[in-house]
Length: 345
Ligand SMILES: Nc1ncnc2c1ncn2[C@@H]1O[C@H](COP(=O)(O)OP(=O)(O)OP(=O)(O)O)[C@@H](O)[C@H]1O
Ligand SMILES: [Mg+2]
Image: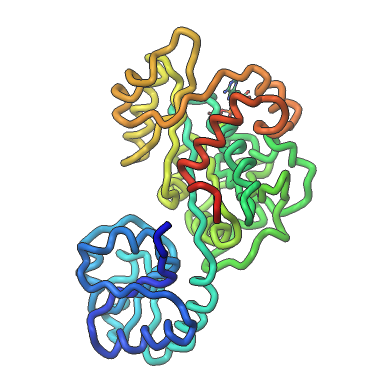
């Protein structure tokens, strides 16, 4: 596997670059310095932290790169810092006063890997999206830092039910709704089942979640788990959209009939999904994978077998990838390796 840099620095030669590079050197971190923005796509995605000098901000913003966490805009030109922090989704470190904070950011954020975030969406209602999200998290929990499962569906009844975690003590969204900024390790506060840290909706009145706590909680979970799986539900509420935006991969579970495909196309359009990967829920007599891929306009990456026992398991609160459901489990394991890497780190 290619060496991945801890820190990506986007800065022309000059004083700001000097300050950044000496701070990086002090932490003994691996660094990639980029001035040719055409060479940016891979390090932008893979680096633990991105440090952008204010003189590069305008050029960089014009690139409209995908959103990512851990971007810092650094320099002494306060007007530039104020103008470009929002377009780059960057936090601002003003120099010279912020140099101590720069050191703290590098010490804290870059050393920890940033886990992939996978969103599981239903192309239509009741197609098995939440079940798949829970199963992916369950198998992801076998990785060194475990997995987190984040439920953002206000109408889903609480994903903790699917894992039999409704009695497990710990915070749910009502306890996290004021979260913002950089969070520490949430694991001691959350219900954990089968190695999965669960952030679930509470039962009772539907909670109107804002976007900020979603970003803070998902950002925090990424630092302390090997994979984060998100269930945004089908509400299209701002919180769900934010969760979709934060995910690097989007699995779209599609019912393999004419209506399922039509609904999936609408879901793709409504959410503005650019690269959804279709997981086909095959019905007896349903459409074959190549036709579904063509009709939805996106590749089919897995076919979920019909597993009757899943419904009863869900009613009992037995996690979907436990027990004898080998066919389903095998497909989910392969899918996990595909969307979240091989599980070696
Ligand atoms: N592969 C499968 N085979 C058979 N039944 C399944 C399968 N996957 C899920 N189910 C069952 O289908 C029902 C709906 O599943 P689930 O709640 O995961 O769907 P969803 O897409 O999240 O629905 P919603 O639109 O309500 O969020 C549940 O009873 C579940 O156990
Ligand atoms: Mg659901």
